[in-house]
Image (cartoon, rainbow, N blue to C red):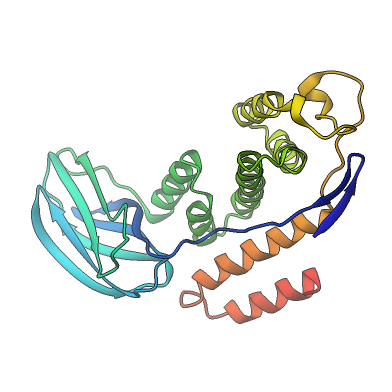
Length: 277
């Protein structure tokens, strides 16, 4: 795609690298407690080409249960355990014949107390969504906001996903020495983070933009908030680019929930009608 800017014509190629081959990982696990019974909810992500995996559940290094699953994309597995009071090391390991798997084991030491503090599934999902957002795992957080039917959470998550994509693509362009294009992408990310009220990310992006301001194409300027001068704002990317990113994100996430929701196909149709695709 080519766009016109004050610095001349920009040849822009957008690469959306959402999923990578050869990765079976455990993103997070959390639990509910009710009447002395514990249910562990393990969020798995299979982005490789091997669908069949085996998940091992251990307590204090003692195997308690195994489950064989067929996974594509995100999927939640549930393991039950009769509560034993006190502190325990809880671990889950995902095993497959995929040679390149990583992040396939997750361990936490949890103090359940004498009886275990009661925790409902909605409470557990909100806790997981918040944790994942803080870790920058926006796709996985979106999974839980969908489970909660939390429209506000989903909307905020979508904005973070788009901002993150602009930031990552901008950083990649910067590494390749494409300073004007990098400035356009990072400026878009900056705008999203400002609208989200994320002062930490705003400061980080502003520092990156300042670091290569002297290498920009003649006629191109940084956003006013970065250099604090009355110069012309850098030409923004066409609005359709952000829209295309959002539609792709929504379709990918809806696809990952296909087996969990009977009305998935209708959701696709509504999305396509809404965005005219």
